[in-house]
Amino acid sequence: MDTGVGIKGTDTPGFAGMPGRNSLGCLNGLKAGFADLAKEPVVAITTVFIVCGMLLFIVYPIAMVLIKSLYPDGVFTLSDYSQFFSGGFHLRCFFNSVLLACIATPITTFLAFAFAFMARKGPRPLRTFFRLNAILPFVTPPFVFALALIILGGRNGIISKFFGIEMSLFGWPGVIIAQVLHFIPLAFIMIDSVMASLNPNLDEAAASLGGSQLRTLGTVTVPLCLPGILKAGLMVFILSLADFGNPSLIGGGVPFLATESYLLVIGQNDLGMASVYSVMLLVPSLVLYYLHRYVVHEDKFKTIGGAPMAREEHPVHPLVKVPMLIICIVTSLAILTIFAVIIGGAFTRIIGINNTFTLAHFSVASSIFALKNSIETSFYSSVIGTVAGTILAFILVRKTVPGKMLLEFISLSGFAVPGTIIGIGFIIAFNNPPLALVGTMSIIVLSMIVRTLAVSVEAGMAKLYQIDKSIEEASHNLGAGSVRTFMKVVLPLMFTAFFGGMVYSFIYSMNTLSAVIFVAAPRYNLAPLAIFQLANEGRIGQACALSLFLILSVFLSLGILKAVTRCLGFKNV
Image (tube, rainbow, N blue to C red):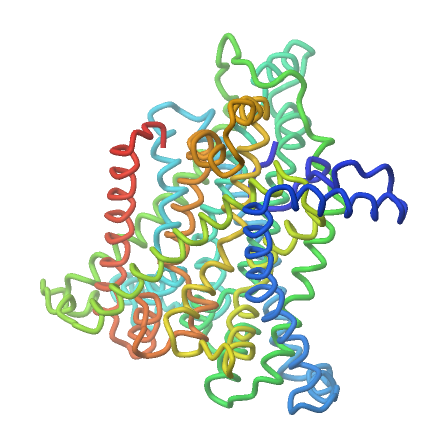
């Protein structure tokens, strides 16, 4: 079972009819693939169109970053790499970024596992509470936690002022806390999906063999959840490594690769060294991705015979329940406190200093303009990206297409590589004719699509593997072609995956910062960028107000989207 975003191990189909792994077999597979495509012109044209799009907007920008790092002025040189590895500031940025990801990843993954465990086996009155708190940070911009921590634990923050405690969360403490709280939802979704597929009777079998709950947790539950845990850790590591907003706001001067890359591009126009920084962001991500893809084999963690319901749910042992309850409650209170601070900051003149009620922070016309741009670009990217991803998933699973594994890998690359690389790559690749897209809304939408395409592809493929192909064969036997079968039979059956991919893409695009901060022109300013700018300028009240507007807009948009789908007859979304 696929548990999240990532390449499926042995489930990924190869070339149809390939007799072996020798060159003759590969050649025969290619010939068969092209011959089958020639029989369906619409499928062939669609495949070519999508492949060209991925090559142009995923492979080309990433390749341009690598080329720019070696040819900064159009001439081959390793001077920037030599300068980077000479020591000092550049290596310190690399070490800090990797260290931050290494600290945030295990903490986030552990907290996500605790939330998933308590949401399924904890006290019934608290299960929904834990689930909502684990998901809640997903609808917020990535740096809202840093903004709230500045209000709480800044040099003149609420904690210092009201409790008389000399403290400051600027620097490592604040960055780690902000990263962990923000990335809990991603890890929770992946781990929870695996935990939902576990056979509850395995716990009964372990108990009947004399195993304690602690032993069962360590030898049955955790090992079977390992694919989701590792996949969650991989995604958290990549996103934490390249996160821009939190380190910029609350880093306290600690240098990181992502923040310094932005300064190199915006402040010094040094695309050569910025490309080197991007390559160094890519290296640890690729190493971990390779280990996950080729070393961890998910087929070793499958249970037998599906997941029948256990006859009776056994209470969790106090030695397991109490520590996890404490961890989840404390983390939930921290998340709720963050949201309370943002709401308080939006409705007071200067929260913690002048708590007079005011609505003045909501009367900024530029903020409403930025919010409108965010909704518009996110809508375009989510619709286009989800449609393209769903069609690509159908082609990869149901059609004989040459190079399926390569196409799936390319579709995942936009999500797997740090957003900083996508942003810098788009600047280098599309700054000159014939595709001079820098400064337009198109480049913003395209960067968002590249970052979220993998979700729709993986969700669509996972759903298609659950749909019996005989249903489509029956449609073909009745005279329907591939396009009609896809529109009338397949798409309705996989609409839940389509809807899930669209929701994720929309929310992610509404809150994204790391890639779009490089490509968004002032006339197409986005809400996350405006919040970031307001916070940097010390206009905390306006930043909180726009953050609240953004969060409410996400909820309202999702409500409208859900209502529309229900009106169309899709009730189970």
